[in-house]
Amino acid sequence: MSSATPTSARVRRLPVVGALRLGRPSDVWFKPALSVVAAVAPPSLLLMTLGRLDLAPYTMAGSLCALYAHNRPYAARAKVLAWVILGMLGGLAVALVSASLTRNAVVLVTVGALLAAVQKAVCDATRVGPPAHVILTFVSSAALFVPQTLGQAPGHLALAAAAGVWAWLVGMAPAPLRPHGPERRATAQALNAAAAYAETARGGEEGGAGARSAAYAAVHAAWQTLLAVRNRPSTTRRALERLVIRAEVALAAPADADPARLRSWARAVRGTGRIPRTGDPRREEDGLRREEDGLRPDGVGSRPDGAGQCRTDGGARLDDDSLRRDGDLLHERDELVGVAAERAVAPRPLRSRLGPLALVAVRSALGCALAGYVSLALGAERPYWALVTAASLYQANITLTWSRAVQRVVGNLVGVLLFAAVAPVAQLGPLALVLCILACNFGAEALIGRNYWLGSVCVTPLALLVTELPGYQPTGELVTGRVVDTLVGALVGFVAAVAVTNRRAGRRVERALTTVDRAREHAARVAADPSSSPAALVAARRGLAAAVVDLRATADAAAGEWWQRALPLERVVLAEQAAHRTLAATVRRRGLLPDPGTTSTYTYTEGASP
View 1 (cartoon, rainbow, N blue to C red):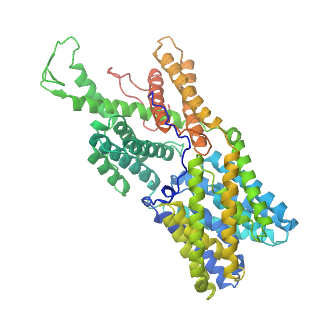
View 2 (view 1 turned 60 degrees about the vertical axis):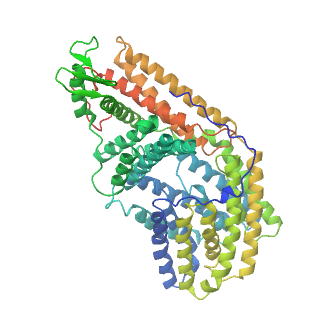
């Protein structure tokens, strides 16, 4: 395992201009943008036709679920979207019942803060991904301040559920056309990131550390996507796994990598055509062994023939490049077997994953509640705006949270100006209002990938336009209220984040890395011991595989925590990589995989769980 250590990330300066710098748009920015429009438009237009546009906020609650899980394989996406819809309905039900039972604003803010804390903790524990808890918190918090009766709640929930089903269908619609689209995109991003790092490392350019971190992050994300489906992998997914392993090899030896070839594979993967083959370890290994048999360490049957080369009796020349390629094939084979072993381990129960997130929930509850209370004290009519602003701030560390606060404030301030310009058009009629809402939905998802503040420029008028669905309201009052609540939520939320910290998150990652190291060393000793029993091999393999799964879960949880050192993502990836090879060794000892250098028949069945 690498001895690399995480770089220090102690807070010295909180950036302002850097937080607003625009990045490159996502490669698939149009997918969530088009999905949310397709999910929102039909229910909203139908209600407009029926003259009940006042009910559109409830259908929009379900439609916004289409924003989730765009990076998941479709088999996993179906489950994630279903759980998101159920979570949205659960939060909405609590909000509607609470609004029906009381109009006490302090009680409603408290309920909203507790819901936000639960939504934050569950989304972090289940690693739902963007937009995570923010949409769920917005839906439930807004519903708290809409007058309700208990008799109306079931109908409103039914509208949200129907729109949620439609959003599920929209999210799954591309599956018949590109059944492996998400996995292909993640693999292509890993290959391109590895190529960029190889070019930077070979050219001695500045920014090599940033390119290396980005490449390891892309490889880590690709493995997360490929391992999201735990059933038997298809031939396509196995081919994609080989390509991700090639990206890992390029990270380990950037000087020997071919960036052009990596980019060529990435381009081929993005399409719908055949996935490029890197070589089948089962077939190519036999040729490798035949070549190895002609090389005798005592010099008999072979003789040196130039630096880095040797000639066999048959005249075949083996140079460093061919030996390196053969080594890559063995590495690829071992890693694939290790990945299969990891896939066979069931994930930890949700309850055990929620435990370490207790402080996350406390921080969210405290920050959201205080933001709502301060907003009420200032006379706000919609304190949920301040509550949602506070809920949206919490990121991986103090610098990133400060950046998110700056982005939120700037985006909202520019957004209220955009709303002031759009409001006269939206007030021309119901159709104009719906079209403006659809345009803001599209703009928010199309732009948010470049920078959060840019997406907020469209999110802010969207939220303000939604408040006008039951009836038009004075533009000046909406703008003033939104500005005040944004400033209150950002300030109070940031103070709460600084006050409630969890410095144990970093230690958990270190402990998880240590656990993987020890489990790998134990598994390696058992695999190397000829007298070890099959039961011991199975126990060692399962222990190591469980440790690898726990490491990934712990690292993902720490990515949403406060601590003063950067997440050692490179060490996490290297530990996983080494563990996969050791897992392969334990499988080999069970007779499912021949030992390198022997002439045994390769009997491991592709896709089978070892």
